[in-house]
Amino acid sequence: MKSIKIALTSMFLILSSYASAVEISSNVGLSSDYIWRGMTQTNGDIAVNGGFDLSTDNGFYFGTWASNASAGTASMELDIYIGFSGEMAENMTYDVGYISVIYPGNDALDFEEAYVGFNIYGLSILYSDGQNDGPSYSEIGYSVDAGPGSFNISYGEYEDTGDNSLVGYDWNIGDYSLGFYYYDFEADSAGSMTDDDGAYVSLSRSF
Image 1 (cartoon, rainbow, N blue to C red):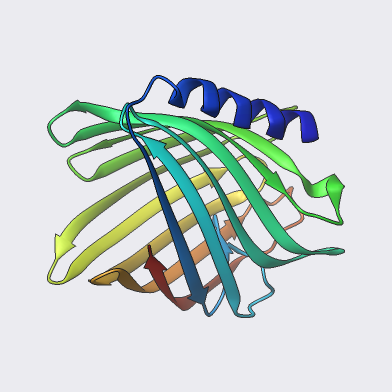
Image 2 (image 1 turned 135 degrees about the horizontal axis):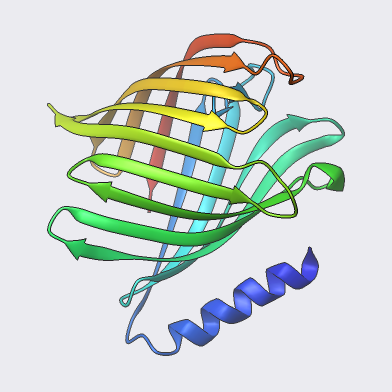
């Protein structure tokens, strides 16, 4: 795992050397629950998260994100990712990258995914390929501007785990974003998860 993180960082530094500008941004957030692919990661408790991102003007990016979590003996989740994004045409974008998800104190849960995504006039398509025989994930969603924010809906399938649906509204106020969401998760009959649904709210700020 350490060698992978070093490789990702080295790759970004090499690629960014060809860019004329590097932008640094950060974010912090608070939510009533941490829902990921339709499943709570905090047993329904409040989540506090934050991250840092470095991006270049030629499309490369590198970032980290962390949150409290309830994952066996681990109480934290740390994500490290690198990728390349850009615009194919007006209102048509792509994003290709690699992410390493780490649970300090419970290495058995660590996993990695390679992903590719497209957004075409608000319609988003995502595919994540689980590495080292991990499960894959696919998702389709749609976002449309509505009033001071945007209305979002998505449906995803997590291999051997379950399907999830999400409906939400993100209200943007300057650098702040207030979100209201409803999720529904239907577990695979052969898996260890159970069906779940509920609502949660989140507040985040970007810097």
